[in-house]
Image (cartoon, rainbow, N blue to C red; front, top):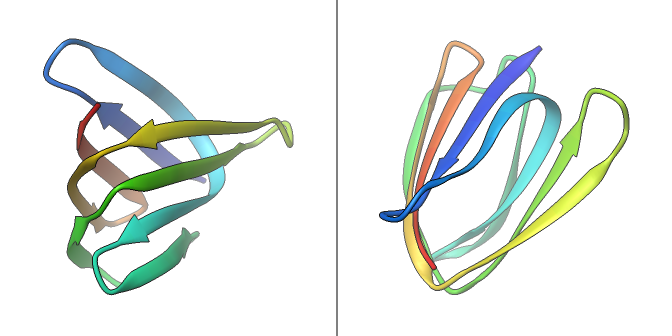
Length: 80
């Protein structure tokens, strides 16, 4: 399982276990799944797509940010 947190300056937008997340990277969108290699990347304007462990898909519209993933833990800092 992957644990994801999406945080904006105002509040925590999402925290929980997921199966996959799709992110709008500065150089193009990419996905992070279980046991992904460690990564740090900038994010551009777009949508974050989250699929939780129950199959529920949630979207978050962002104007940019950063993502850091390591050891099945993903931290996303976003501007909204």
